[in-house]
Image 1 (spheres, rainbow, N blue to C red):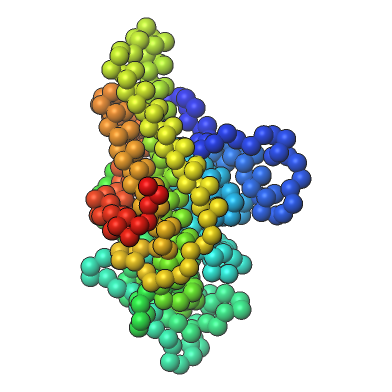
Image 2: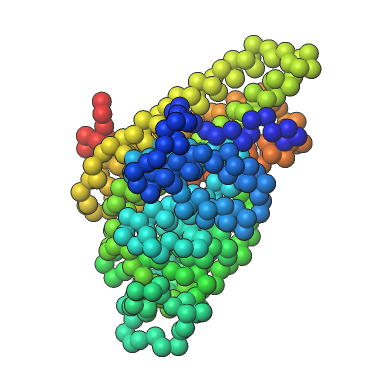
Amino acid sequence: MNTPHRQWQPVRFSPPPARKAAIEPVPDAESVLDAESVLNIEQLLDRVASAVGDVPALLAIAQQAGRSAPMPGGGRTARLWELLASVAAVDVAAARVLEPHLDAGAILSQAGTSETFKGSWGVYAAEAPGTRLTAEPVTEPATEQGPEQGEAEPGKTPGDVQLSGSKPWCSLAQFVDHAVVTAHTGTGRAAFTVDLRAAGVTCDVPEWTSRGLREIPSGTVHFDRVPAVPLGGDGWYFQRPGFAWGGMGVAACWLGGAVALGRHFEAALLRGARSQREPDQVALAALGEVDRILASTLQYLARAADAVDAAPQPASGGAEPNGGGAVGAWSEALRVRGTVAAAVERVQLLVSQNLGPGPLAFDERYGKCMADLSLYVRQHHATRDDAQLGALTLTGEHAW
């Protein structure tokens, strides 16, 4: 984009905290960190804007943000989702770097191993036909691997579990240091942490033909008896309410991308008006609909964030089909993700129809946002997710 036109303004789900409250002493370290992140968000967004397309620089920003970002379910979920949406409003791909790193930190915290959250992280839980990652206990001690070859974190026993096989859709695996991965055990699926720099890890370079998320190709990673550290047991990764919370955090990124498109649209109409080309009724109606969609969806996520913070953690149960989550939490995640995905797609349609081909052809930032967001939102499974929600609705998981 030739001019920033509010591109770096934070996305707020609710009014920002009063400055007096933000600078007063707070009682605990987490509150101090959250206040710091709120106060410095404009500076962080400026750094993101300067690092667009530079994956190592974006990962460095993600690591810095990971030291101060609120945890989901910890009382400041709305602030976390505002951070994700604000970064996506600057650059969708940058949010695609930040979100899994913060999600990994939340997973480690929920597992009681937050001290291992060092370096950069990915989260790889996808499955695909023809690929399978297996976790097996080691029958004899591994003696040949030293720290430089992937020795486990201090305090963990190296080599108790080894991963072998292949994991698809591993975004940025060639860039990040560690990952939370899911693998098949003899009795189910479980989560593990793994050092992606360890001997036995190889990353395919994917033939990425998409114009969207071009700096974040997602290839297959191969593991050959790579030491790993378990997180919880079979099913824990999917049963914890944090699985649903993470899915809603992704939706916040999608919504931030839609906010960026709305800002592009508003700026284009203002530029036209300054050039004596006032917007017609069709353009004004489209902008009004975009405003309704964005305002109502932001308010919906704010309420969802409050519910995440207020609700007690559900009791653990069996993993639901297709990567379900905790009872109640996952049905709400499906509602949030479906609502946001529909909002994003409608905003994309309204903006693209009204702005026409010109910005797609000549405005790099606008075209990148449209392409990145189109690919990112396809993580939503559309009708299949609605079918899963419908099945949960029949069990009484609804508020109406």
